[in-house]
Amino acid sequence: VQLQASGGGLVETGGSLRLSCAISGGTFTTRLVGWFRQVAGKDRENVASIRWNTGDTNYADSVKGRFTISVDNAQNAAFLQMDNLNSEDSAVYYCAAGKVYSLEYSYWGQGTQVTVSS
Image (cartoon, rainbow, N blue to C red; front, side, top):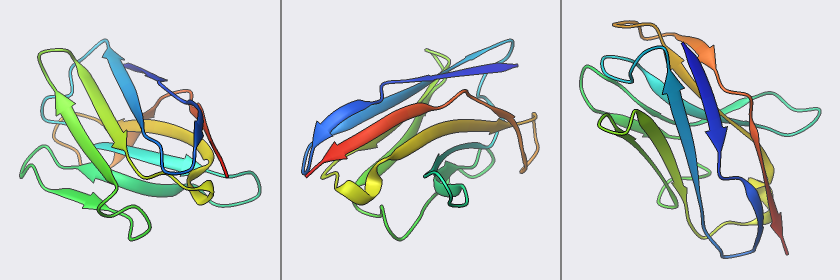
């Protein structure tokens, strides 16, 4: 299984971006899917996740109400819609997925840079 994240870029404060994560060698069906971000010198942060078995979504407090995670199994893609961005959202964003029926992450995309200008 390989993941390919895309959609990062430069956006002004208050703007929006939509990150995409394409999966190859498998599907997102029955997998835990998540988005993480990391700033240099800081720990990687899990900003959003969606569980295959319940459909439940979870968000970091810092992004609740602004970010939305979704999975489109027909497209074999996962998305992170990010609205009302601010400078603290600037980071490298990674998508991740678990093995089938697992609630742990095993696969990681290569990361896409998001920069929010003030």
